[in-house]
Amino acid sequence: MPPNFAEAKAKLSHLDMEENPATIRNKSRDFFWYSPVLKDAMDHLEADFVINAKSEDEIIEILKVCYAHDVPVTMRGGGTGNYGQAMPLAGGCVIHVAKMNKIKEIGAGFVVVEPGAVIKELDDELKEKSGQELRMFPSTYSQATIGGFIAGGSGGVGSANWGALRDLGNIKRLRVVTMEAEPRVLEFTGEELHRVSHAYGTNGIITELELPLAPAYEWIEVFVRFDTFRTATEFAGAITAEPGVLIKLASVYAAPIAHSYFQRVKPHVTESDHLVGLIVAPHNIDGFLTLLERFKDGDVIYRSDAVTWDRHPGPIYEFGWNHTTLRAMKFNKGLTYLQVRYVGGLEKVMEAYEAFEGKLHMHLELMREGDGIAFAGLPIVQPMNKDELDQLVADHEAMDCMIFNPHRYTLEEGGRQSADERQLAFKRESDPKGLLNPGKMIAWDEPDFDYADMYSYKNTRPKPEA
Ligand code: FAD
Image (cartoon, rainbow, N blue to C red; front, top):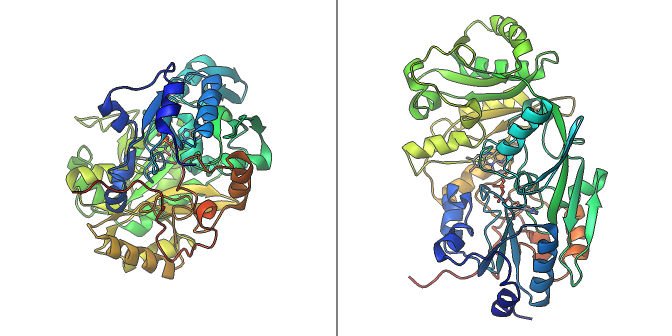
């Protein structure tokens, strides 16, 4: 049946519905514009109506009405996703969960929280009330919600110690509402978590989360300058791998990123300096300094516990992860980026550094992975059109680098270029009409899709005539 937007809207009009067209447009948009390809494909998209949900009961009511009237539903937390995750491809209803932000329980090593809690606000309260903190957060800490992070993110500050969100133990429990005639409320733990974590809200709505916590410290933030990219990368890898030195962040910025794009760092570096940004536990600063002495060309140029700079740089996490790209784009809107995994460690990173010289500036984020470490990359890419970007992706893949393509809006293309059978199987039972964030899971719409092509959702609203 075609969607009946007017009828669904009328039946839900007693809820907190946005009326202002500018607000509806704003709440229909995320950070899709980060990619020139997504900007072109998605800029015109808009929800038919937006509801600010206040409780799980309201979510159930909205889903029931939208199901009955075949209206697509897209969830929205902070709207900071950079893969266009929260963009309503087929219009319909956007549910904004900012008002579902209660912290329900804080215990020894865990928190139970509603999905709309802003991560920084949640973390501040955890520190104040229990001396604990979240294991990891995205660099959009002050805007992103905890539900949006679990549904749309992958890791971030903290991953240098705790690995990725999908790693065992980093999520304890998720409560999920299904999109059926009579929505069900399910509780997932263990292997079941993978059904809905990082599923872009395509197969269930998260209404409560239980997450593990770590002890909170007065972390020390540090910038270290290096003469060579190799030594900077070696050092960042070594400190991440050092079992007795607790860190939360190890980012590597190849020259000239720090000089060209980090305004408050610029007076302290030259164009040829490579920079490492670190967040170190206060009780391990000696371990960090001892390790650094083994690397002859590294100098500490900034410590947050002994600031000597005239202008404070601000929190170091806002230089790392995708904030590096954001800072570069402030200087040149045409710059773009990739998300890469350098399978093969340091030598693969060095091979890519040399192969792509002139096309991109290397930016690495170190993560714990299995029994070792992983080099993730968010290189800053020179202005390019779609075909050139596709070629750059193909060149990386030819070198066995894994690309999580940020110039695509589907789960599969932005992920491992293959269908996630667990997510698909759950979607079949939880969303039989395919109304949750339609167009984002290729396997649902086109099981035989060839990942060499770019997927284009057939029901994406057409662009208005120019
Ligand atoms: P939204 O963008 O609102 O939503 C993300 C996805 O989750 C959407 O598909 C949405 O439909 C779905 N969703 C939201 N709420 C629910 C719910 N309750 N139930 C089901 N589905 C839901 N990501 C990282 O992982 N690590 C980083 O370090 C990082 N750094 C970033 C830096 C910048 C500058 C930018 C622009 C983005 C960055 N991101 C990063 C991406 C993004 O900010 C994070 O993933 C963030 O956690 C998303 O949270 P949000 O509340 O903004 O989610």
